[in-house]
Length: 178
Image (cartoon, rainbow, N blue to C red; front, side, top):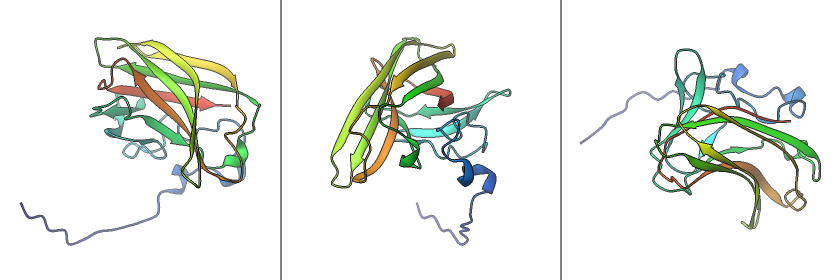
C-alpha cells in the first residue's frame, strides 16, 4: 500500500488550550483534568502504550485509554512546572474512574520522578479499588514525599496503572490536585 501526502499544516494550538502562564501554580495543578479544553486532542495527558482519546457521551467529555495490552501501559500527566510542587506539602488528589470491563480492578496512583541521568524514583499515592462500569471517585490527601524534586530532576509525572486487569479500557475524568 502506497500513501501519498501532499499537504501538511503545522500550527500553534488555540491559546485557550494552554495553561495560563500567570497563574500556573494556583489552584488545580492538573491542567485540563476534565477533558473539556479540546474535543479531539487529549493534551496534556499522555499514555505509555495503547490509545488515548477524548470521548464524549453527549453530556460530558472524558479521557478514554484503550488498546492496552499490558499493565505497564499507563495513563500519565507530566507536571509542567516543577516549582509548583513542594516536598512535605499536603495535597488532595481526586479523579473519577470507570471501565467497560465486567471484572472490577484497582487503579494505582503513583508519582514518578526522573533525573537527567535517567534514574527514576516511584512513589505510590493510593490504590483506588473496585473500579467498574459505573463512575467512581477516588480522592485522597497525601504529603508530597521528599526526594522527588530538585534541580537534577527532568520531570515529575502522575501515573495511573491498572492492577488485576491489564487490558481493560479505562475512562478518566475530573482529575485535580490542589
